[in-house]
View 1 (spheres, rainbow, N blue to C red):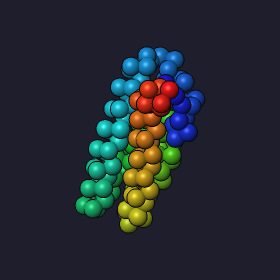
View 2: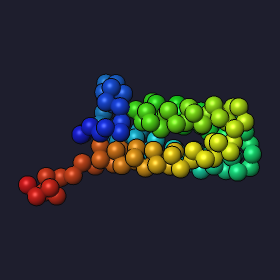
View 3: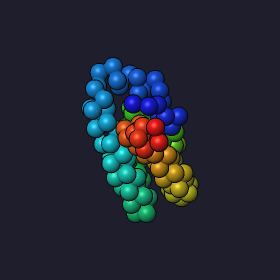
Length: 124
């Protein structure tokens, strides 16, 4: 599998130390699914002014992102977790577009990692 600048190389190597490529692909695809769901739940919690639910969603997103090497996502989620913890829900909501963008970049990196273009598709 090829590496990506949007996923932490050291984290991926650590995961490869105990997961086969197939299991790593499953893990990364599950991460994308779970992250999308957590972001939806986070948005809903913010809209409904559910501070603790927003904090828990951001915390889960932070942890899962760090575990797979999506460090930009993890860092943003850490900031959002702190904003939820301190009741800064309007500020948190203002950062949601950044989180969506980071997820799209992580998804693209994961797709490139798990579905590299074939040599035939590259014209070779």
